[in-house]
Image (cartoon, rainbow, N blue to C red; front, side, top):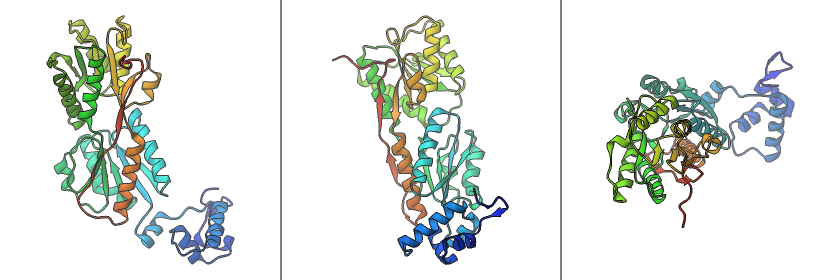
Length: 345
């Protein structure tokens, strides 16, 4: 049963109180997690809530406590393997803290991104975890901050916003140096996406350049492959055009796993072996990396740490923490698999 009584009407607070043999005030205290309820009373009320399928009214809860115990997660795509894994981790981290998550897909559209923050889900949520793709730091700074926001990803953020990201430049440098350690001298980057205004690609390109130059290799701009869109098909076309135009490379760093898996498929189609002829590294360490052929070496952000930090920081703001935004670098590693194997000692 879910919020109904014998299928005929919504379960009310008074129904729970009657079922548990306590006052409605006691039920309200349990629902709002007040600490002065005895363990026995709390147990009786919680059993009654379960038995009846009672669901607290969010509007009433907000009137009483000023909170809904719901947060929003705004991400560009729900069907992207990285974002779906991130959403799963955030939902679980929120549930562990007795919060529920409302997921909003922005499609990387600046107006949709701004709408999430302007409306704050019309008062339905206590805070927002937000990974922007298009809006600028100035856009964000001009929005009224009635509801706490924690930002994820590489876009610049206002000084007042909490922000969690990995060090994309350092991670890219690690990946390039791994390829160099495998003896690769001409390493391509896939790819520079047309119209990409997000900060991730720029920072990964910076790390790519730094990794090459620190190792005494020059940067050949022809090895930065231009891609028309974020689709795997566009990445596949870019690699094919590079090969057929005579651009030679023996290593390939990809901006995400979808690009990398598309590249692996194209290399197979062209009769080019991985990693023997071209070693490939992806990014995000999604489920694709474990089931590609060959399995994919990938830069692996610690999604669990990102989710836990984001939820914790947001709830701290919801509960009244003030002050300048905190900027946190989440951990990452290079998950080594067959496409760019471990360097032999």
